[in-house]
View 1 (cartoon, one colour):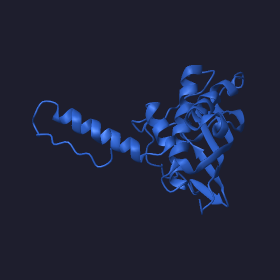
View 2 (cartoon, rainbow, N blue to C red; view 1 turned 135 degrees about the horizontal axis):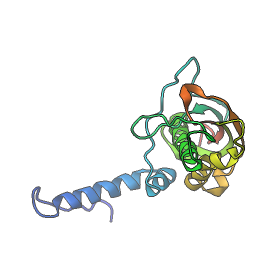
View 3 (cartoon, rainbow, N blue to C red; view 1 turned 45 degrees about the vertical axis):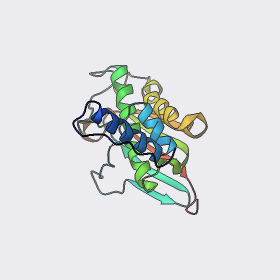
View 4 (cartoon, rainbow, N blue to C red; view 1 turned 60 degrees about the vertical axis):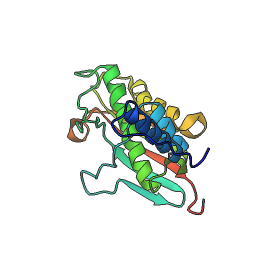
Length: 189
């Protein structure tokens, strides 16, 4: 029923809950399919982070977008630092990779003019894991990123090729860094 308005007296019982429910329904209706899935998963995608050195966060050519490596930053803007096999558990490493996926989606949104529904496919994930020489379970760590992208974009668009390698250090001491290549809608879509 388009255009139905309900009069609610501010300060009356239920006024806030009705207003909040109406606002949430309007936001969900305006949001795209991917943004709705993000909300259903309880995620919050932050504003795209500025680069920490001399590079651009993403570069588009045709309908391909190359996303620079993203660091694991939590909602409190704190980077997740540590080394797998030393001072970080597998679960903590997976969570760091998951946070990299959230940061990747932030850059994807920016590259798509604010509309994640323009993402057509996650083509490739490029992941680096800060680890000891003895640590060999890099793929399981990076599953934190891959699994989240598949949950958000679905198996058809989210399934991707990837590499997951270990290295002795990463920028700012972070546990994981992940870059990506994605396909987006043609400009005329």
